[in-house]
Length: 124
Image (tube, rainbow, N blue to C red; front, side, top):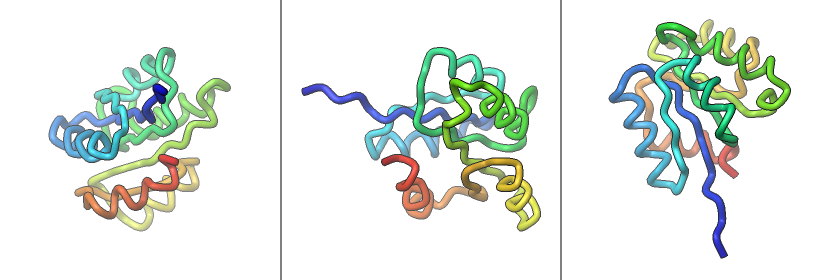
């Protein structure tokens, strides 16, 4: 029997950060799609149905905040959980992200074990 792999979109403009997140997810059997900004993410969502989007908050063009608005404003994608990640971590940014409608928030740098434990509820 062939089963479809879990799909996740990672929106990250920094190559190294995108690779770290991608490799962690792939190691756990997740099919990962990396986009470099929110515009690319929203375009990809026309063809790919992920169970999760993980987005950096600070990016050129369409940032993570604007990407969330784009995802939530489309009836076809509004239900997809979106996790915010950022190197500009503070308690205020975390609270703002959750108030804005992100389903979760993680500071950078990513702790591999903590990252995967945090995502378990989203990946099942």
